[in-house]
Length: 469
Image (cartoon, rainbow, N blue to C red; front, side):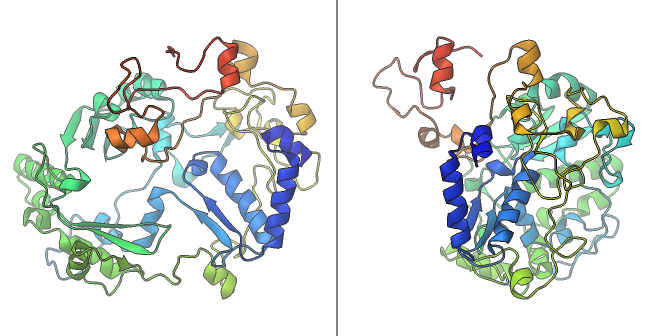
Protein backbone atom coordinates (compact mmCIF):
# COMPACT_ATOMS: atom_id res chain seq x y z
CA UNK A 1 0.00 0.00 0.00
CA UNK A 2 2.80 2.45 0.77
CA UNK A 3 4.28 1.87 -2.68
CA UNK A 4 0.85 2.25 -4.27
CA UNK A 5 0.49 5.60 -2.50
CA UNK A 6 3.85 6.73 -3.85
CA UNK A 7 2.89 5.78 -7.41
CA UNK A 8 -0.76 6.88 -7.51
CA UNK A 9 -1.07 9.43 -4.67
CA UNK A 10 -3.99 7.37 -3.27
CA UNK A 11 -3.55 7.18 0.54
CA UNK A 12 -2.19 3.83 1.72
CA UNK A 13 -4.86 3.62 4.42
CA UNK A 14 -7.60 4.03 1.80
CA UNK A 15 -6.04 1.28 -0.35
CA UNK A 16 -6.01 -1.09 2.62
CA UNK A 17 -9.57 -0.23 3.59
CA UNK A 18 -10.81 -0.77 0.04
CA UNK A 19 -9.12 -4.19 -0.06
CA UNK A 20 -10.77 -5.18 3.23
CA UNK A 21 -14.18 -3.96 2.03
CA UNK A 22 -13.95 -5.98 -1.19
CA UNK A 23 -12.79 -9.11 0.64
CA UNK A 24 -15.61 -8.76 3.17
CA UNK A 25 -18.23 -8.54 0.43
CA UNK A 26 -17.84 -11.70 -1.60
CA UNK A 27 -20.33 -12.09 -4.46
CA UNK A 28 -21.71 -8.59 -3.82
CA UNK A 29 -18.97 -6.18 -4.91
CA UNK A 30 -19.69 -4.60 -8.29
CA UNK A 31 -16.73 -3.14 -10.18
CA UNK A 32 -18.38 -0.54 -12.42
CA UNK A 33 -15.92 0.57 -15.10
CA UNK A 34 -16.70 3.36 -17.54
CA UNK A 35 -15.44 4.07 -21.02
CA UNK A 36 -12.50 6.29 -20.09
CA UNK A 37 -10.36 3.57 -18.44
CA UNK A 38 -10.88 1.32 -21.47
CA UNK A 39 -8.76 3.51 -23.72
CA UNK A 40 -5.69 2.17 -25.48
CA UNK A 41 -2.70 0.73 -23.64
CA UNK A 42 -3.85 0.82 -20.02
CA UNK A 43 -7.01 -1.18 -20.78
CA UNK A 44 -5.24 -4.55 -20.67
CA UNK A 45 -3.35 -3.86 -17.44
CA UNK A 46 -6.40 -2.40 -15.72
CA UNK A 47 -8.70 -5.26 -16.69
CA UNK A 48 -6.29 -8.02 -15.68
CA UNK A 49 -5.74 -6.33 -12.31
CA UNK A 50 -9.48 -5.94 -11.73
CA UNK A 51 -10.19 -9.54 -12.65
CA UNK A 52 -7.42 -10.75 -10.35
CA UNK A 53 -8.91 -8.91 -7.37
CA UNK A 54 -12.44 -9.97 -8.32
CA UNK A 55 -11.43 -13.61 -8.80
CA UNK A 56 -9.61 -13.75 -5.46
CA UNK A 57 -12.72 -12.41 -3.69
CA UNK A 58 -15.35 -14.44 -5.62
CA UNK A 59 -16.76 -11.41 -7.39
CA UNK A 60 -16.92 -12.69 -10.96
CA UNK A 61 -20.08 -14.00 -12.59
CA UNK A 62 -22.56 -13.13 -9.84
CA UNK A 63 -25.47 -10.72 -10.19
CA UNK A 64 -24.28 -7.88 -7.95
CA UNK A 65 -20.78 -9.33 -7.60
CA UNK A 66 -19.05 -8.82 -10.91
CA UNK A 67 -17.12 -6.56 -13.25
CA UNK A 68 -19.22 -4.30 -15.45
CA UNK A 69 -17.45 -2.54 -18.29
CA UNK A 70 -18.68 -0.18 -20.96
CA UNK A 71 -17.60 0.81 -24.45
CA UNK A 72 -19.93 1.74 -27.27
CA UNK A 73 -19.00 -1.02 -29.70
CA UNK A 74 -19.59 -3.75 -27.12
CA UNK A 75 -23.21 -3.63 -28.28
CA UNK A 76 -22.27 -5.39 -31.51
CA UNK A 77 -21.83 -8.63 -29.56
CA UNK A 78 -25.54 -8.54 -28.74
CA UNK A 79 -26.37 -8.67 -32.45
CA UNK A 80 -24.36 -11.70 -33.50
CA UNK A 81 -26.62 -11.87 -36.56
CA UNK A 82 -25.07 -8.66 -37.91
CA UNK A 83 -23.21 -10.60 -40.67
CA UNK A 84 -26.62 -10.96 -42.32
CA UNK A 85 -26.24 -7.27 -43.17
CA UNK A 86 -22.53 -6.49 -43.35
CA UNK A 87 -21.39 -9.80 -44.89
CA UNK A 88 -24.06 -10.48 -47.50
CA UNK A 89 -22.30 -11.84 -50.57
CA UNK A 90 -22.34 -8.91 -53.03
CA UNK A 91 -22.04 -11.36 -55.94
CA UNK A 92 -24.97 -13.48 -54.75
CA UNK A 93 -27.55 -11.03 -53.39
CA UNK A 94 -30.84 -12.34 -52.06
CA UNK A 95 -33.54 -9.89 -53.14
CA UNK A 96 -36.33 -11.78 -51.37
CA UNK A 97 -37.05 -9.75 -48.20
CA UNK A 98 -38.59 -12.72 -46.41
CA UNK A 99 -35.55 -15.00 -46.53
CA UNK A 100 -32.00 -14.79 -45.10
CA UNK A 101 -29.02 -13.28 -46.87
CA UNK A 102 -26.34 -15.55 -48.26
CA UNK A 103 -23.21 -14.65 -46.35
CA UNK A 104 -19.62 -14.55 -47.56
CA UNK A 105 -16.97 -12.29 -46.02
CA UNK A 106 -14.62 -10.45 -48.38
CA UNK A 107 -13.04 -8.06 -45.89
CA UNK A 108 -10.74 -8.21 -42.87
CA UNK A 109 -11.30 -5.99 -39.85
CA UNK A 110 -8.48 -3.75 -38.65
CA UNK A 111 -8.17 -1.24 -35.86
CA UNK A 112 -8.15 2.45 -36.76
CA UNK A 113 -5.11 2.77 -34.51
CA UNK A 114 -2.93 1.30 -37.27
CA UNK A 115 -3.76 4.09 -39.71
CA UNK A 116 -3.31 6.52 -36.80
CA UNK A 117 0.26 5.19 -36.42
CA UNK A 118 1.05 5.47 -40.14
CA UNK A 119 0.15 1.79 -40.69
CA UNK A 120 3.39 0.69 -39.05
CA UNK A 121 3.61 -2.74 -37.42
CA UNK A 122 5.35 -3.05 -34.06
CA UNK A 123 8.89 -4.32 -34.57
CA UNK A 124 11.35 -4.68 -31.70
CA UNK A 125 14.93 -5.43 -32.68
CA UNK A 126 14.85 -8.65 -34.66
CA UNK A 127 11.26 -9.54 -33.65
CA UNK A 128 8.01 -8.67 -35.37
CA UNK A 129 5.52 -8.37 -32.50
CA UNK A 130 2.49 -7.52 -34.63
CA UNK A 131 0.82 -10.85 -35.37
CA UNK A 132 0.16 -12.11 -38.88
CA UNK A 133 -3.59 -11.71 -38.37
CA UNK A 134 -3.15 -7.99 -37.70
CA UNK A 135 -0.45 -6.99 -40.16
CA UNK A 136 -1.55 -3.54 -41.40
CA UNK A 137 -1.66 -2.55 -45.04
CA UNK A 138 -1.44 1.04 -46.35
CA UNK A 139 -4.69 2.91 -45.75
CA UNK A 140 -5.79 4.62 -48.97
CA UNK A 141 -9.43 5.46 -48.25
CA UNK A 142 -11.51 6.31 -45.19
CA UNK A 143 -15.27 6.71 -45.14
CA UNK A 144 -16.91 6.96 -41.73
CA UNK A 145 -19.93 8.46 -40.04
CA UNK A 146 -20.70 9.97 -36.64
CA UNK A 147 -17.15 9.37 -35.45
CA UNK A 148 -15.07 12.50 -34.96
CA UNK A 149 -12.53 10.45 -32.99
CA UNK A 150 -11.39 8.72 -36.20
CA UNK A 151 -9.90 11.96 -37.55
CA UNK A 152 -10.96 15.25 -35.97
CA UNK A 153 -10.22 14.23 -32.39
CA UNK A 154 -7.63 11.59 -33.20
CA UNK A 155 -4.54 11.16 -31.05
CA UNK A 156 -1.33 12.59 -32.56
CA UNK A 157 -3.55 14.87 -34.64
CA UNK A 158 -0.70 17.02 -35.94
CA UNK A 159 1.16 13.97 -37.26
CA UNK A 160 -1.99 12.53 -38.84
CA UNK A 161 -2.78 15.76 -40.69
CA UNK A 162 0.77 16.40 -41.89
CA UNK A 163 2.17 12.92 -42.49
CA UNK A 164 -0.73 10.48 -42.84
CA UNK A 165 -3.50 12.22 -44.78
CA UNK A 166 -1.24 13.30 -47.71
CA UNK A 167 -0.57 9.62 -48.45
CA UNK A 168 -4.27 8.79 -48.68
CA UNK A 169 -6.45 9.06 -51.79
CA UNK A 170 -9.87 9.82 -50.32
CA UNK A 171 -11.54 10.77 -47.04
CA UNK A 172 -15.35 10.85 -46.87
CA UNK A 173 -17.36 11.82 -43.81
CA UNK A 174 -21.08 11.47 -43.07
CA UNK A 175 -21.99 14.10 -40.47
CA UNK A 176 -24.78 16.22 -39.09
CA UNK A 177 -22.34 18.50 -37.24
CA UNK A 178 -19.58 20.45 -38.93
CA UNK A 179 -16.76 18.72 -37.07
CA UNK A 180 -12.99 18.87 -37.39
CA UNK A 181 -13.24 15.64 -39.38
CA UNK A 182 -15.30 17.54 -41.95
CA UNK A 183 -12.57 20.19 -42.16
CA UNK A 184 -10.05 17.60 -43.34
CA UNK A 185 -12.37 15.46 -45.49
CA UNK A 186 -12.39 15.46 -49.29
CA UNK A 187 -16.15 14.85 -49.36
CA UNK A 188 -18.72 15.61 -46.65
CA UNK A 189 -22.16 14.02 -46.94
CA UNK A 190 -24.76 15.93 -44.86
CA UNK A 191 -26.91 13.31 -43.15
CA UNK A 192 -29.95 13.21 -40.89
CA UNK A 193 -29.57 13.74 -37.17
CA UNK A 194 -31.05 11.18 -34.79
CA UNK A 195 -34.14 13.38 -34.53
CA UNK A 196 -34.69 13.32 -38.30
CA UNK A 197 -34.33 9.62 -39.16
CA UNK A 198 -36.50 8.58 -42.10
CA UNK A 199 -35.65 4.90 -41.71
CA UNK A 200 -36.14 2.84 -38.55
CA UNK A 201 -33.09 1.50 -36.76
CA UNK A 202 -32.21 -0.37 -33.58
CA UNK A 203 -29.43 -0.65 -31.05
CA UNK A 204 -28.66 -2.11 -27.63
CA UNK A 205 -26.29 -1.51 -24.75
CA UNK A 206 -23.99 -3.82 -22.86
CA UNK A 207 -25.05 -2.08 -19.64
CA UNK A 208 -28.80 -2.71 -19.73
CA UNK A 209 -31.25 -5.30 -20.98
CA UNK A 210 -33.23 -3.29 -23.51
CA UNK A 211 -33.50 -3.56 -27.27
CA UNK A 212 -33.84 0.06 -28.38
CA UNK A 213 -35.77 0.76 -31.59
CA UNK A 214 -35.64 4.09 -33.40
CA UNK A 215 -39.00 4.70 -35.10
CA UNK A 216 -39.06 6.99 -38.12
CA UNK A 217 -39.24 10.62 -37.09
CA UNK A 218 -42.18 12.95 -37.83
CA UNK A 219 -39.89 15.97 -37.43
CA UNK A 220 -39.14 17.84 -40.64
CA UNK A 221 -35.55 17.87 -41.80
CA UNK A 222 -33.75 21.10 -40.93
CA UNK A 223 -31.49 20.95 -43.99
CA UNK A 224 -31.29 19.09 -47.31
CA UNK A 225 -29.95 15.86 -45.83
CA UNK A 226 -30.21 12.11 -46.39
CA UNK A 227 -30.02 9.11 -44.11
CA UNK A 228 -26.62 7.41 -43.83
CA UNK A 229 -27.93 4.34 -45.60
CA UNK A 230 -29.40 6.51 -48.36
CA UNK A 231 -25.97 8.01 -49.01
CA UNK A 232 -24.54 4.53 -49.55
CA UNK A 233 -27.48 3.61 -51.75
CA UNK A 234 -27.11 6.73 -53.91
CA UNK A 235 -23.41 6.03 -54.38
CA UNK A 236 -24.20 2.50 -55.59
CA UNK A 237 -26.79 3.97 -57.98
CA UNK A 238 -24.07 6.16 -59.47
CA UNK A 239 -21.64 3.25 -59.69
CA UNK A 240 -24.27 1.26 -61.58
CA UNK A 241 -24.71 4.17 -63.97
CA UNK A 242 -20.97 4.61 -64.53
CA UNK A 243 -20.19 0.90 -64.97
CA UNK A 244 -23.38 -0.33 -66.57
CA UNK A 245 -23.51 -3.12 -63.97
CA UNK A 246 -26.96 -3.25 -62.34
CA UNK A 247 -25.67 -5.40 -59.48
CA UNK A 248 -24.39 -2.23 -57.77
CA UNK A 249 -27.97 -0.99 -57.65
CA UNK A 250 -29.22 -4.21 -56.06
CA UNK A 251 -26.84 -4.00 -53.08
CA UNK A 252 -29.25 -1.60 -51.36
CA UNK A 253 -32.44 -2.64 -53.14
CA UNK A 254 -34.60 -2.40 -50.02
CA UNK A 255 -33.40 1.17 -49.43
CA UNK A 256 -34.35 2.04 -52.99
CA UNK A 257 -37.76 0.46 -52.33
CA UNK A 258 -38.15 2.71 -49.27
CA UNK A 259 -38.17 -0.03 -46.62
CA UNK A 260 -35.04 -1.09 -44.71
CA UNK A 261 -36.97 -3.39 -42.35
CA UNK A 262 -35.92 -6.59 -44.19
CA UNK A 263 -32.29 -5.87 -43.24
CA UNK A 264 -33.27 -5.36 -39.59
CA UNK A 265 -35.45 -8.47 -39.53
CA UNK A 266 -32.64 -10.60 -40.91
CA UNK A 267 -30.38 -9.41 -38.07
CA UNK A 268 -33.07 -10.15 -35.48
CA UNK A 269 -33.66 -13.64 -36.88
CA UNK A 270 -29.96 -14.53 -36.77
CA UNK A 271 -29.09 -13.04 -33.35
CA UNK A 272 -29.23 -15.24 -30.24
CA UNK A 273 -30.76 -12.56 -28.01
CA UNK A 274 -33.41 -11.35 -30.50
CA UNK A 275 -34.52 -14.41 -32.45
CA UNK A 276 -38.31 -14.62 -32.45
CA UNK A 277 -38.97 -10.90 -32.45
CA UNK A 278 -40.74 -9.30 -35.40
CA UNK A 279 -39.33 -5.90 -36.18
CA UNK A 280 -42.66 -4.42 -37.23
CA UNK A 281 -44.11 -5.35 -33.84
CA UNK A 282 -41.30 -4.00 -31.66
CA UNK A 283 -41.18 -0.86 -33.82
CA UNK A 284 -44.85 -0.26 -33.12
CA UNK A 285 -44.44 -0.73 -29.37
CA UNK A 286 -41.41 1.60 -29.39
CA UNK A 287 -43.59 4.24 -31.01
CA UNK A 288 -45.87 3.96 -27.98
CA UNK A 289 -42.94 4.37 -25.60
CA UNK A 290 -42.67 0.70 -24.62
CA UNK A 291 -39.19 -0.86 -24.74
CA UNK A 292 -38.35 -4.44 -25.69
CA UNK A 293 -36.28 -6.76 -23.51
CA UNK A 294 -33.21 -8.46 -24.96
CA UNK A 295 -33.48 -12.24 -24.58
CA UNK A 296 -30.25 -12.62 -22.64
CA UNK A 297 -29.50 -15.52 -20.32
CA UNK A 298 -29.89 -13.28 -17.27
CA UNK A 299 -31.68 -10.05 -16.49
CA UNK A 300 -29.89 -7.87 -15.59
CA UNK A 301 -27.00 -8.88 -17.82
CA UNK A 302 -24.20 -10.61 -15.99
CA UNK A 303 -20.89 -11.34 -17.68
CA UNK A 304 -19.37 -14.70 -16.77
CA UNK A 305 -22.61 -16.00 -15.23
CA UNK A 306 -22.51 -19.32 -17.11
CA UNK A 307 -18.81 -19.83 -16.35
CA UNK A 308 -19.30 -19.21 -12.62
CA UNK A 309 -22.72 -20.71 -12.02
CA UNK A 310 -22.53 -23.64 -14.46
CA UNK A 311 -18.75 -24.20 -14.65
CA UNK A 312 -18.62 -23.59 -18.38
CA UNK A 313 -15.14 -22.84 -19.75
CA UNK A 314 -13.95 -19.29 -20.24
CA UNK A 315 -13.03 -18.23 -23.76
CA UNK A 316 -9.30 -18.76 -23.26
CA UNK A 317 -6.88 -21.50 -24.30
CA UNK A 318 -7.08 -23.12 -20.88
CA UNK A 319 -10.78 -22.48 -20.32
CA UNK A 320 -9.90 -20.63 -17.11
CA UNK A 321 -9.37 -16.98 -16.23
CA UNK A 322 -5.78 -16.27 -17.24
CA UNK A 323 -3.54 -13.54 -15.85
CA UNK A 324 -0.39 -14.57 -17.72
CA UNK A 325 1.11 -12.12 -20.19
CA UNK A 326 4.17 -13.02 -22.22
CA UNK A 327 5.40 -9.42 -22.12
CA UNK A 328 6.13 -9.62 -18.45
CA UNK A 329 3.82 -10.52 -15.63
CA UNK A 330 2.32 -13.88 -14.68
CA UNK A 331 0.24 -11.89 -12.22
CA UNK A 332 -0.44 -8.24 -13.07
CA UNK A 333 1.64 -5.60 -11.35
CA UNK A 334 1.88 -1.91 -12.17
CA UNK A 335 3.45 -0.90 -15.44
CA UNK A 336 4.13 2.74 -16.25
CA UNK A 337 2.19 4.12 -19.25
CA UNK A 338 3.72 4.42 -22.71
CA UNK A 339 3.63 8.21 -22.57
CA UNK A 340 1.42 9.65 -19.83
CA UNK A 341 3.88 9.48 -16.95
CA UNK A 342 6.46 11.66 -15.25
CA UNK A 343 8.82 8.69 -15.07
CA UNK A 344 10.58 6.31 -17.41
CA UNK A 345 7.79 5.04 -19.68
CA UNK A 346 6.49 1.45 -19.92
CA UNK A 347 8.62 0.08 -17.07
CA UNK A 348 7.28 -2.94 -15.17
CA UNK A 349 7.36 -1.77 -11.55
CA UNK A 350 8.30 -4.74 -9.36
CA UNK A 351 10.95 -6.18 -7.12
CA UNK A 352 12.86 -9.18 -8.54
CA UNK A 353 10.53 -12.19 -8.64
CA UNK A 354 10.68 -15.61 -10.38
CA UNK A 355 7.21 -15.07 -11.86
CA UNK A 356 8.25 -11.82 -13.55
CA UNK A 357 10.89 -12.66 -16.12
CA UNK A 358 10.06 -11.18 -19.53
CA UNK A 359 12.35 -11.21 -22.52
CA UNK A 360 14.16 -7.89 -22.24
CA UNK A 361 15.36 -5.67 -25.10
CA UNK A 362 18.78 -7.31 -25.12
CA UNK A 363 17.17 -10.69 -25.95
CA UNK A 364 15.70 -9.46 -29.23
CA UNK A 365 18.54 -7.19 -30.29
CA UNK A 366 17.38 -3.82 -29.03
CA UNK A 367 19.35 -1.28 -27.00
CA UNK A 368 18.01 -1.49 -23.41
CA UNK A 369 18.50 2.27 -22.96
CA UNK A 370 16.45 3.20 -26.06
CA UNK A 371 13.13 4.66 -24.84
CA UNK A 372 12.22 6.44 -28.09
CA UNK A 373 8.75 6.25 -29.61
CA UNK A 374 8.34 2.98 -31.50
CA UNK A 375 10.88 1.26 -29.26
CA UNK A 376 9.52 1.73 -25.76
CA UNK A 377 6.16 0.12 -26.60
CA UNK A 378 7.90 -3.28 -26.70
CA UNK A 379 10.51 -2.58 -24.03
CA UNK A 380 10.09 -5.08 -21.20
CA UNK A 381 12.26 -3.81 -18.35
CA UNK A 382 11.64 -4.61 -14.67
CA UNK A 383 12.66 -2.09 -12.00
CA UNK A 384 11.63 -1.53 -8.36
CA UNK A 385 9.75 1.66 -7.51
CA UNK A 386 12.72 2.94 -5.51
CA UNK A 387 14.56 3.13 -8.83
CA UNK A 388 11.68 4.14 -11.13
CA UNK A 389 10.71 7.00 -8.81
CA UNK A 390 14.07 8.66 -9.49
CA UNK A 391 13.71 8.57 -13.29
CA UNK A 392 12.14 11.08 -15.69
CA UNK A 393 10.19 10.82 -18.92
CA UNK A 394 12.59 11.60 -21.81
CA UNK A 395 10.57 14.67 -22.84
CA UNK A 396 10.96 16.04 -19.33
CA UNK A 397 14.61 15.09 -18.93
CA UNK A 398 15.76 16.21 -22.38
CA UNK A 399 13.33 18.89 -23.57
CA UNK A 400 11.93 20.48 -20.43
CA UNK A 401 8.30 19.41 -20.65
CA UNK A 402 6.48 19.64 -17.30
CA UNK A 403 2.85 18.57 -17.66
CA UNK A 404 0.86 15.48 -18.64
CA UNK A 405 -2.12 16.09 -20.90
CA UNK A 406 -5.14 13.82 -20.59
CA UNK A 407 -7.98 13.73 -23.10
CA UNK A 408 -11.15 13.66 -20.99
CA UNK A 409 -14.26 11.58 -21.54
CA UNK A 410 -17.19 13.89 -21.07
CA UNK A 411 -19.88 13.22 -18.50
CA UNK A 412 -22.67 14.68 -20.63
CA UNK A 413 -21.36 14.10 -24.15
CA UNK A 414 -20.34 11.34 -26.51
CA UNK A 415 -16.86 11.92 -27.86
CA UNK A 416 -16.90 15.49 -29.23
CA UNK A 417 -20.33 15.71 -30.81
CA UNK A 418 -23.40 16.52 -28.67
CA UNK A 419 -21.62 19.07 -26.49
CA UNK A 420 -22.01 21.49 -29.40
CA UNK A 421 -25.59 21.98 -28.21
CA UNK A 422 -25.69 25.00 -25.92
CA UNK A 423 -27.73 23.39 -23.16
CA UNK A 424 -25.47 20.33 -23.06
CA UNK A 425 -22.41 22.57 -23.07
CA UNK A 426 -23.73 24.21 -19.90
CA UNK A 427 -23.70 20.81 -18.21
CA UNK A 428 -20.35 19.88 -19.67
CA UNK A 429 -18.23 22.98 -19.14
CA UNK A 430 -17.55 25.64 -16.49
CA UNK A 431 -19.40 28.49 -18.21
CA UNK A 432 -23.10 28.42 -17.36
CA UNK A 433 -24.61 31.84 -18.10
CA UNK A 434 -26.65 31.46 -21.29
CA UNK A 435 -27.53 35.16 -21.22
CA UNK A 436 -24.00 36.40 -20.45
CA UNK A 437 -25.18 39.00 -17.97
CA UNK A 438 -21.52 39.89 -17.54
CA UNK A 439 -20.25 40.42 -21.08
CA UNK A 440 -16.70 39.80 -19.93
CA UNK A 441 -17.50 36.16 -19.26
CA UNK A 442 -17.07 33.52 -22.00
CA UNK A 443 -19.91 31.98 -23.96
CA UNK A 444 -21.02 28.53 -22.77
CA UNK A 445 -19.22 26.64 -25.56
CA UNK A 446 -15.95 28.54 -25.16
CA UNK A 447 -12.82 26.43 -24.83
CA UNK A 448 -11.22 26.15 -21.43
CA UNK A 449 -8.26 24.55 -19.71
CA UNK A 450 -8.38 22.19 -16.74
CA UNK A 451 -5.09 22.45 -14.89
CA UNK A 452 -3.92 21.74 -11.38
CA UNK A 453 -4.19 25.13 -9.59
CA UNK A 454 -0.75 24.75 -8.00
CA UNK A 455 0.83 24.05 -11.39
CA UNK A 456 -1.00 27.03 -12.88
CA UNK A 457 0.19 29.44 -10.18
CA UNK A 458 3.75 28.21 -10.65
CA UNK A 459 3.71 29.51 -14.22
CA UNK A 460 1.80 32.70 -13.37
CA UNK A 461 -1.74 31.66 -14.35
CA UNK A 462 -4.74 32.44 -12.16
CA UNK A 463 -8.34 31.25 -12.46
CA UNK A 464 -10.10 33.22 -15.19
CA UNK A 465 -6.98 34.12 -17.17
CA UNK A 466 -6.90 33.78 -20.93
CA UNK A 467 -4.07 31.52 -22.09
CA UNK A 468 -2.48 30.56 -25.39
CA UNK A 469 -1.49 26.93 -25.93
